[in-house]
Length: 476
Image 1 (cartoon, rainbow, N blue to C red):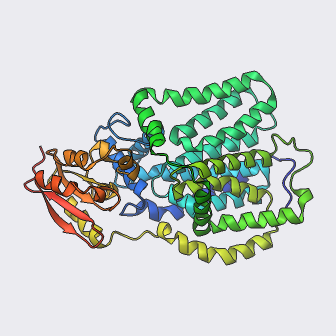
Image 2: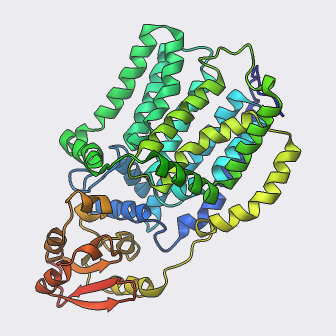
Image 3: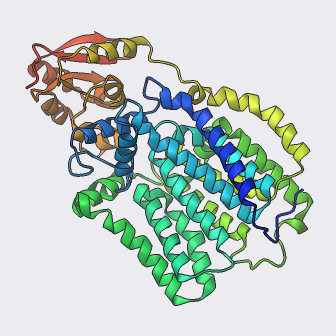
């Protein structure tokens, strides 16, 4: 086993730039197919693509455009959309930039706790594993939040031997940015708190905590504090059900087995190496509270507790575990020969399971017919769907309150057959696309209400996917 580094030598600027350039190139190359995909790749990809189009049309986050994420996420999408010149795929720049930040931060964290080879291994695992690909190729709040969290942990690891008030403020801003994208990643505060508490100095503790809270709350003000609270927090509290840690554990393990076998293999090899060489596990000279292992395990453990107690748990959330596992596996990695053998055995399986995001397929079946039909609607026509991505990829605008048509909004009573039909009746809405039996397909009264609003059923397939078009639709 390669023992963890006990003393760090600062890497040369040249080697640092070369490594980061190579990692950045690899990160971009493997995500280009997802970035260029003509269809929406996930439900969230479609929701946030539709949100970007709604913001282009003048909608404001929370005030007009519904958002279940933190107050920083939709503004990040709007900025990325503008940088991409409001082209069809521009909103996905959010995920591409998040991937670059995440991989770079993982490498920096790796250089703080192990050698160059270990840092490259950790960053390589993070950029290639499928759960990360699914949240940093298609648009997803998890990708940006994990990137900010990993950067915050990287700074924590680099500064663990010498903390100052100024550095504490930077760490607080990192925590604030993380939870302002997705509150579920709040466990990033644990390693930061351990480091600040270990210093036993009140001023850095107060400064770091104040920076985190002030940054987060300041982002509430432009959109209305009550709007942010209702959509980002109260909505999730209402949707939360009974805790199911055993079921959640099964989903975490199944997801990692499908999507993250590269990381699982590295983790198994790390555990085996530690069992065989227990004395090399933690350098004796390291202070236990601020040792890299303690900080990384605290981050990993806090994240695991949140995932096990979350309800409902979605598969993309498992990606939050990957950076900490990759860094621990790289820090305590076995000899290169064992890693190479594991890669030969695992990579084919990994590629097969990651192929849908590495090489996305186009629309097929009824979806293939719906897109050109929506594109052929009169100029200025809007469309709505329980899968808003198909409206986004058709080049149409979704009314801002319906950019998120998730099952949770139905379960909390925010969306009903009556409310959907009321939006459909607006003069500029010309099409309704129902793609899920458990979302709008569950509204038994919706077909009748749409018929009263002047809609005709023009397409229906064996999965009950339906397209309704308004007769004589003339948008104002």
